[in-house]
Image (tube, rainbow, N blue to C red; front, side, top):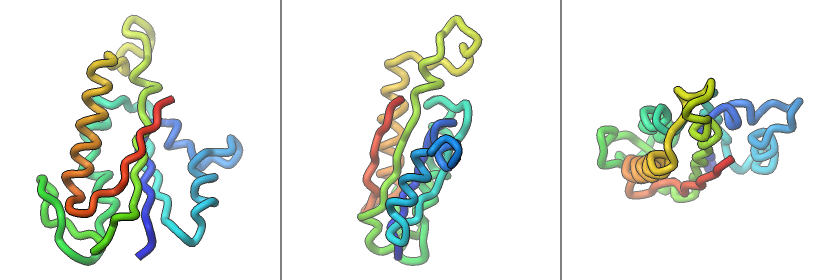
Length: 141
């Protein structure tokens, strides 16, 4: 099976395949052409608080016919026998950094909560994909 790279993030990720802006996801997909499937799971406007509710769904992008893996609620999901070369990027922070008193106050997440949310997302992705979790690459704006 081909390696999978799942891009999980906010609008910077969602718009990452836009050629007009020379999107980073398009460049990544081009660099891994015929080597990996690049899957975009960008959610415009999302912060880490809201995105944490989507982690199980995003981790499900690694499911494949094969061996039952995982220990969390998604236990019994299937994935490739190896899966060790899979990657998930987690790219949030632009919306979290909105000013608490500004027009983006709904999106604001305090720094301590932002860090805790990221850590919880990484832990959950790893838990759901055991014993062969993908590599997790954290990207901040």
